Image 1 (tube, rainbow, N blue to C red):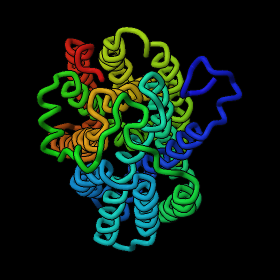
Image 2: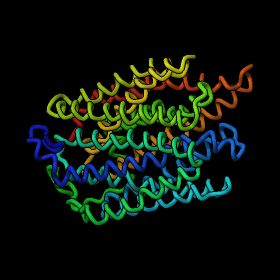
Image 3: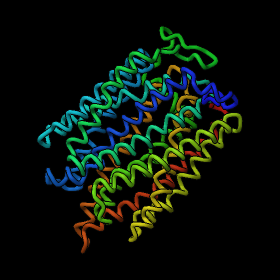
Image 4: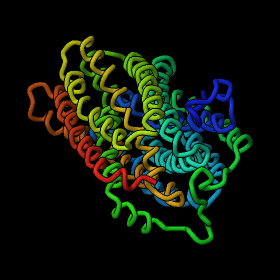
Length: 429
């Protein structure tokens, strides 16, 4: 069975496009891992530099995000107009190099500056990767392929949390960053030497002529504004990213602060949840998407809407439970289920817009989702925790209740996916 064709024999798993999918999924995992490493290191970095919750949130999340989102849209435009293989290789080399330099930083300002470099490099990885995959897989198997690709987010989060926590307990937080940065450098060379640039739009009904059809970002924004399905998918993904990945930024600190886990124990626990539970969710989603590809496309967004609302229950339990066992059980449900939307959303971003707008559409999704995930969520939660803590007899309890309240944002995200169902049948390409 091949991702490209669910009915194909098992021997066809070993195809060139599945190799491309494997390599790009691995790179996506490293992209996410390098991002989550500092999230796992919140407590030791906070202690070393004597920072508040709001201060460490700015360093570990907001500093990267500001430049990530600022560079994301122009790099998405570049992905629609240049060689995507070379762009992926250079982006991987840049963010890996700066991650390594994070580990060599000796002051707050040094760490802040090289963290900015990580953000710029990471912004150039995902738009060309998804655009390239869309030209390797036809529309019928694109949802399954993107769900497999999205496994990189759960595996990467697991590596970032478990690996960084384990290395920090053994050697210190700086050594963790050096190791994660070094991993990506040879992978960049592998991309350059083993992948090729496919024909743009090759798997669609028409192939755009780049010399004639080269829409800019304003054209893409106008297209999104005029088509309700893709507009609601982008808005829904942004909100769901806040309620899932955004809360994950503080979950390691939550487990250490309220349940007495070490950085290694918290990282390992969350890493296993992400790797096992998240990957199982992604594979299950890929299986479902492969079977829904010939059915009513509304089922894709209905499924995401339902799960986005349903995961509120385990989210509230996870952050309010006094028992570590109950909190862990709830997190086993909440964290994997919160990532279900990724694969179908990425596929919809390729199938609801013309081929010449795909890189820009993904960049716009990353722009809005990462503002929610990397800017608003860590800074809002950290600052709200500082503020509310000043009014509580036990200020350490403030983080717990801020996380509980933020869990309810899944209702808002689910509504947008439900709204996308109204026009998706007419707008899907």
